[in-house]
Structures are given as structure tokens and as C-alpha cells.
Length: 175
Ligand code: NI
Image (cartoon, rainbow, N blue to C red; front, side, top):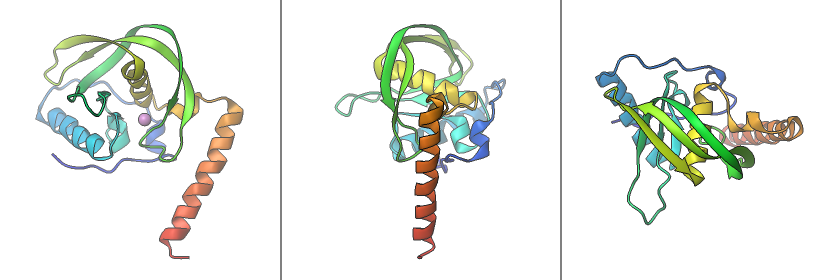
């Protein structure tokens, strides 16, 4: 396993669409392992392959509480086949550090996906896991949670975020 760099907004690759996985080989398992290590290290509750620069339809999630055992979900070619109800919860993203905002999602979701051996599986979820499934699948379409904000909120986000990036660059440059 290896820790990978997490790409950050406004990296253009994050806007690209990922392609379906067709080969369930060691390379895929290696990619999944790297994502798991990178997500737990961050730490985060979800990660999509494009966030580490691999434009493949692969996501991972672990929304278990701190005092619960790990509940790792590795989903290849994931699709939401049913979603119901409305939810408006605060989201963040490892690719958009330092920013959180409320996003509208389905409250429950049924995920159809393949495991890393290619077997088809389904998983129903509500709460954080249902939201995470929708958030991570968005990444495979090149969509970030900030893209789902109203135009006004999005433009406020951009200004704030780009200002923060500049400040960080200035710090790093020692000025
Ligand atoms: Ni994200």
C-alpha cells in the first residue's frame, strides 16, 4: 500500500468524468488499497479514485463512528439505483479542504456496485453513508459538492477559497 497525494480544487482533473472499470486485476486492488490508506490517513470518510488522479469508477467509504468497528465499503462502477427522501446536511471534501456547506441529497440510497473481484453487490443506506455514496459518485462525474451550491454561494466560495490558497502560497513562500 502507498499513501497518495490528494488532488485539490481547482485541479482540472477533478472536473473530468471517470471511465468504467473493466479489468478486475491486481492493479485495481492496488489502487483500492492505496485509496484506503490515503483516506484513513487524511482522515476522511470517503474518497473517489479521481481524487488521487485515477480517472476510474471506484469509490471507497467508511462512515462508521469512532467507537464502532470499521465499516469499509469499496465500490467499483457504483450506481445509485434508488434514492428517496430529502436531506440537507453539511458536507466537506478532502479535495476542498477548509470549506463546508449544506448540500441537498436523497436521504436514503441503494447502491449497486461491483467488488474488486467483479461480483455484483447492493447496499442500502441512510444518513451519512447515503450522503457519502452520492457525494463520491459525483466525483466520478467530475462534480464537486461546491458545484451543487446556488450560483451566489458558489461565487462566494470561489472568492474565499482562492483567497485562502493565495494566503497559503504566500506563507509557503515565506513572505
Ligand atoms: Ni469529496
